[in-house]
Image (cartoon, rainbow, N blue to C red; front, side):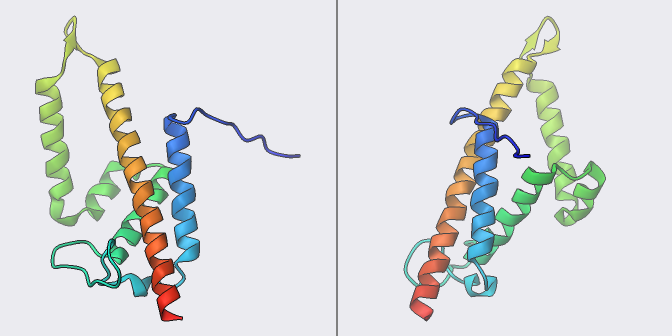
Length: 150
């Protein structure tokens, strides 16, 4: 029995999520030796990464980690806090909650959930599109590096 594939509109959040996951899976299959990405700049031929700028390896590991969240869902809050560096995640989440509580648009005393949803889904769409482009760039740079090395 064949599984039916559902086709969503081009700008649908599900389409963007599926595309991101597919591009990152492709990147993982193409990049056979991730250590070659260390100290390499995302843009530019053979340039070493500048101090403070993320190298290709950092992008590679970040993109893979985000794909796991996209495919399998988010970690429970306690696990996420324990994995985040030095409790900064907890502080950032508390600040965001305080800002959200104080700055909500309110309709009859309640937060405007529709506006919040629109803001967050638009932001997620934008971020996933940007990360998809980064995954494609990492894949292309790795192929360039391998083409020069072979």
